[in-house]
Image (cartoon, rainbow, N blue to C red; front, side, top):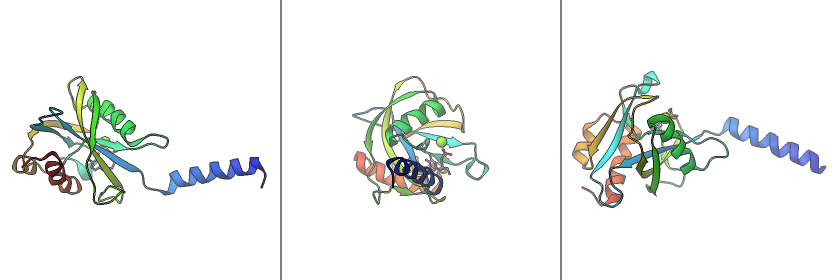
Amino acid sequence: MSAKGLVVLTAKLTVMQHTFTKPVVVGAAILDDATRPTQMLAARRKAPKSLAGYWEFPGGKVEPEETPTGALVREIREELGVEIEILEHIAAPSDAGWRLDNGMNMHVYTAIVRLGKPEPLIEHDRLEWAALTASDLHELEWIPADRLILDAILTQLGGT
Ligand code: 9L3
Ligand code: MG
C-alpha cells in the first residue's frame, strides 16, 4: 500500500473507532479543601428525563483528542462555571473505570475549585455541598452507578 493509502486508511479507522466505541465519561468529586476536606459538591441533574432528579458527580464525555483530566476541567467549566484543579484519580474496579448503566465507563477524580463559585448552569438544577460522611452522602438520591463510588471516595480519602 502507498504511503498516501496508509494515511487514508488510518484516518478512516480513527473515524470508525470514534463511531463505534462508547465514549469515556469523567466525573468530579469536588472537595472544599485539598488537604482536610470536609464537604463534597453533589449536583442534581435536570436532563435527560431518565436522569432528572438524581444526584451525580458533575462531568461528561471525553472528546476525541482530549485527555480525561483536560475533558473534566472543560466539562466543569461548562456545567458549573468554575476552574478546578484535579487532585487524584479514584481507584476503580478496573482500568476501564466504573461501569455506568448505559454501558459507558466513568473515571472519577477529586478536585478543588480554583476560581469562581459553582452554579448549576446547563444540566443541573441544584448543587449541594454534602458533608463527607457515608450517612450524609448516601442520603441524596444518587444515580445508582454514582452511588457505588461514594464509599470508594470515602475510603480513599480516609473518611468515615
Ligand atoms: N453519567 C453518569 N454519572 C455521572 C456523569 C457525569 C455522567 N457522574 C452518565 C449520564 C450520561 C452519560 O454518562 O448517560 C454522559 O454524561 P453527560 O455528558 O450527559 O453528563
Ligand atoms: Mg454532564
